Length: 160
Image (tube, rainbow, N blue to C red; front, top):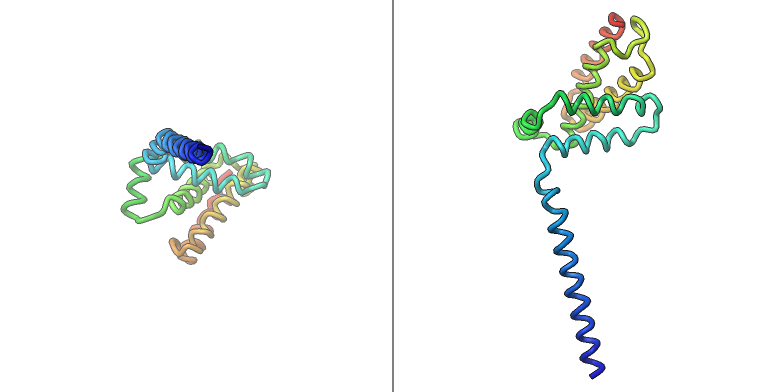
């Protein structure tokens, strides 16, 4: 009698674990399965930015994320991922680098001509780090990086 009771308890425990696992899958799997490319890339962008303890970056990261979110549609991001065959992480790096570049040449993050504000310095660091990572991933040549950096530095000197 005691042996069958243990068996019944074990079966009951296993069935409870299975039912609990199915409930968790039912609850969370649809969110993961139906996440858009834009949502996934935005998560990768936020993850990249969370790695910074720099005050200047912390000041500007919400502006950057907001700008990326407003300026790029899911279709545009999906097209970049499928046509360019980019991973979500690498798409996020391109978005961070390109958006940082665009914000820097807008003049909004300058103290005066040729001089960046603290937020501008944070954007400049993000641009550099994102593009260096793309060079390391062989998605951007060193020459293209150097040319873009030179263009950015020229724009910073002239704008402000």
